[in-house]
Length: 408
Image (cartoon, rainbow, N blue to C red; front, side, top):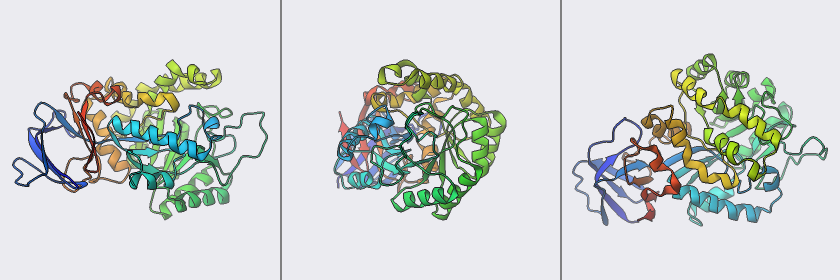
């Protein structure tokens, strides 16, 4: 592999409110080898970054990479070959926005991970939960009230978001099967959702015993549980059951945020999803009932950021977009930036995200031994977060694992 020496580098990684003074970064193979002021190493190529800013590759902790359709019900009806082909385009577009690692929250399988690591198509590094676990009538059940056909529980298509499991024995088996199939963590639907037809937002879904069983299975496998959550009650009971990754959290209250922080949880807000659905949801097929649920969630989103920050609850970056709305992935930076300091917003997609993915020191950092996942920004993102939007327009170089995938 080619080695690179980046000169006159000012790092904006979210660890401070201002970028670093100019330094050098030496990339050897797929990792960062040295970071310092006067690196003596000889590189195959030297790149002068005077006037530009270097960032770690961005990390999206809540994405749906197999959701080229805005409807999971329709997506689940497509042949696996078509879903995989479309997913390759979704993932490539994410990479071109500067996201070099993506955590999929329902659908993507180990085969996609293998294809990525074999270099079959350009993509971010992929972290997966396999199929999300849902109860009958929950956020993973898209049959509708008048469809009484049995839900498919085994041999699910690639385009399906999740799988149905009811009762402790079935929940345990489903969790074990996802882990056997290559899941890096387990995802559960522990609250009602906007995109699903029969679960109001207040719906709690799994029993406490079922959640405790899932958490035990994840811990037995050395991993953790992420849960789809909106209401304060749902969040509190999930924390009590041992859930670690709290997705969305729009309706959280201060006492529960304090509890989550004390238990070492990490939240993953996804405000851009609700902003995009509020403006474009009808055009991509969301029903009036679903859009009404979106508004309930959206209206409290900005307040939730302040509540969680004041409680000291770490927040990782998430987008949670589907279909054509995936193009808004980077706009979460600007939305959060209207409430939070820019360096904290950037940290949500670098160091905080790396901690959630249990990949600290490997991703989300520009330091020796880390993967050479790097982006060069034409302008200081600590002054203007919108430089991270517009489909990577202001990113003059993107490197993933030591391989340059964009250089203009």
